[in-house]
Image (cartoon, rainbow over all chains, first blue to last red; front, side, top):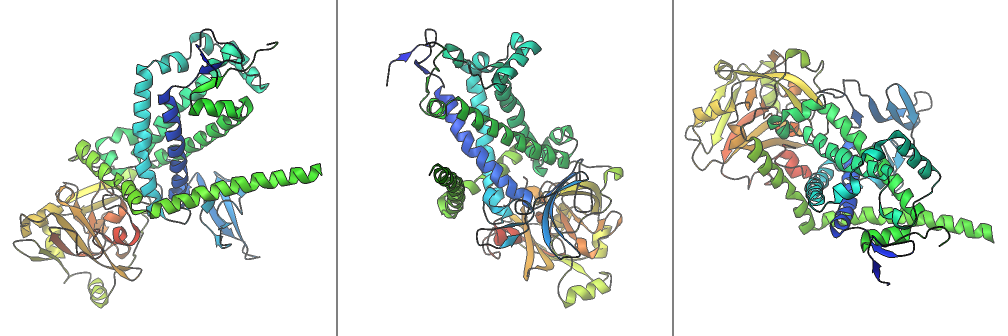
Amino acid sequence: MGKLESPERAQGGDLVRRHRLSTRLWHWINAVTLLVMLMSGLMIFNAHPRLYWGEYGANFDRPWLKIGTLQNTRTGEYSGFLQVGDARVDTTGVLGLWEDGDGRQQRYAFPSWVTIPSRYSLAGARIWHLAFAWVLALGLLAYLLWSLVNGHLRRDIHITRREWSPRHLWQDVKQHARLRFPKGAAALRYNALQKLAYAGVLFGLLPLMIVTGLAMSPGTDAWAPIVTELFGGRQSARSVHFICAFLLVAFFVVHIVMVVLAGPINELRSMITGRYRLPKEKGQ
Amino acid sequence: MSRQLILSRRTLIRTGVVGTGGLLLSGCDKLFENPAFRSALESGEDLHKASQRALGRNALAREFSAGDMSPVFRANGSREGAGEEYRRHLAQGFANWSLKVDGLVERPLAIPLTALRQLPQRKQITRHDCVEGWSAIGQWQGPRLAQVLDLARLKPEAQYIVFHCADFYRGRPYYESIDLVDAFHPQTILAWQMNGRPLEQQHGAPLRLRVEKQLGYKHAKFVTRIEARASLDGLYGGKGGYWEDQGAYAWYAGI
């Protein structure tokens, strides 16, 4: 392994220090935690696969989203469906009707290959979900505080006024769409879109997940009713919780695609050992 | 040759993805069977109870106005009480029914429903949150549990209040328990009235516990006997409630 270049003098091809230990540690703890939270959350959703707006919502009330199973009255055949508003999509095989590992037909909303536990258990999923919720919340709090102290937020995440300009953002969008990634020392800095994505997750989605989760707790609602009221009621908070979870999934997909396109080995190494080889500049 | 290669690579990737997912899932399931890991996860319940008690021990659950109420309040769990005796009382409109209060009390009681109705009443419109995720808002009325416990005078060693119920769920009797913090909370009532009418059978006639800062399964329906205990050991499975014993649900259900 070559000598580490200091970031000020680094150029394409050099091995540099990229991610701090705190970032790397939190990244991997978070990766596991979010996966467990998502998969156990999908199992919890299976207990009542309907979402509502407002304070209350149960079987007699109108959901805005529903996953279920239908039986065709003529043929007697079953099918799974996802309904959003009045639009209904057939999801047989994936949602609402699917086959488990033993080849048996199941009618739960989300299939066993995306849930924790894999077999239906609301109680088990709650034990996973509510234990890892502490890891998520305390981990995020510690990371944000530490990043404030060590300057990570100010240096790497803070979006400058210049970067906020529509022309600059548009330029970044174009570069991204053409899959033109920065080379040399420029690759050390996040561009505006990256900063927006990371800031959106750090200050938007993750805190929203935690707060909407707390808003669903009857105990928390008693001492901090403002949290539930802020979202327009417990069932609204549950809906926002679900929507934010899928926005995090979307972030994850884009994140993985970008890592693969930018050079998965180098990127992975930088998040494990902290060392990153700067992409070579043209003509270098 | 190249076609074969592509196919095999595709198969490889698919096998890899499905295999990794499968390993991860069965790994999680296996891990959950490990008693040490499981009890570490379950200790989250102690954190929930400690933090919620620290932040809002005396906080009141939110109360709503009549306009906020659910048009139809979903009934869940047992819809019927069990046994000859229950059916006889139901037929008589619970005119000769009484609530037993015993265990670690100075003065065991049998309080007729008519007497419970004559105690000072609390009326509250609250949101009922089921562990499954749905909510319904309804109005409840009845005496505070604290009044009934004060009439029976708890012995100093009493730590838990157990509710024995007249319903059987999947062939087993239903029961629940709370500690004294929740038992003496001002909104913890023994509701005999719901939405302005005597409690219907499907909602637990003649008497249902309301313990507003916890999830629905703690709100025992068809309550026939209240028992004060020093510990939950020896009460059926020892975890303090039907779902706690049958399904590993948390005893503290504030979240």
